[in-house]
Image 1 (cartoon, rainbow, N blue to C red):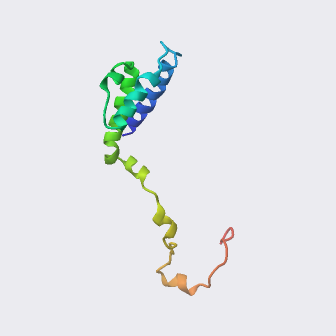
Image 2: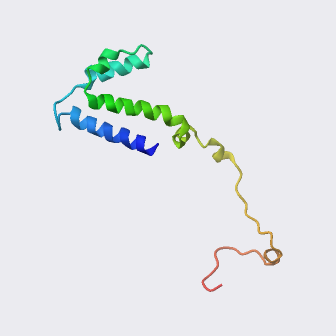
Length: 115
């Protein structure tokens, strides 16, 4: 899971550097990748739009799809859960079961050094 997550991040950073023209030729992803993503989002994928994108964009997209495919089977699924029950649960009270602890008067505050 972490390998795929790191691979997606590294591929995205590399794609940013390659697409911005820092390393290699500049590529405008708005002309190829963005229309392809919109077509996938509307459930009418345009394969030609992604075929025109450089391999680095295609690899980043493939790793991203792999990440979404394995997401439900990993601990990342907890990103969608909110700990709402935590806000309303009662406090945890710790009580000693030993007899000696009950016979002692209650203390207020911390124990001092040497006690």
